[in-house]
Amino acid sequence: QVQLVESGGGLVQAGGSLRLSCAASGRTFSSTNMGWFRQAPGKERESVAAISWSGSTEHYTDSGRGRFTISRDNAKNTVYLQMNSLKLEDKAVYYCNADPLSSMYPLPWGQGTQVTVSS
Image (cartoon, rainbow, N blue to C red; front, side, top):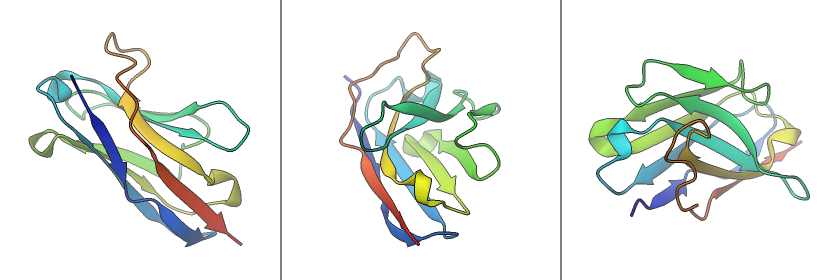
């Protein structure tokens, strides 16, 4: 059973940067397309970015395109989300999981990591 543990969130000023990490257990991580998601208060969870199992292909939704970069290190069973130029509206709990287009989706959700952006 894959377990996902997100970390790296915190409080940052608008315009700042954060790097989120998601550590995964289990042997299937390196063959699974992965994604980052976020859920703001009162809103549904939404996809932000996805990356192929090899790391060769990345996809971004409008929420993440241009400011966020997804990457992975299969040797460390970890996927990352570099977030730059953060905006107030980026405040949310961020989660990783399999890419929604993957047959592995959804894996058991982790606890997420809180990102708060202040003005």
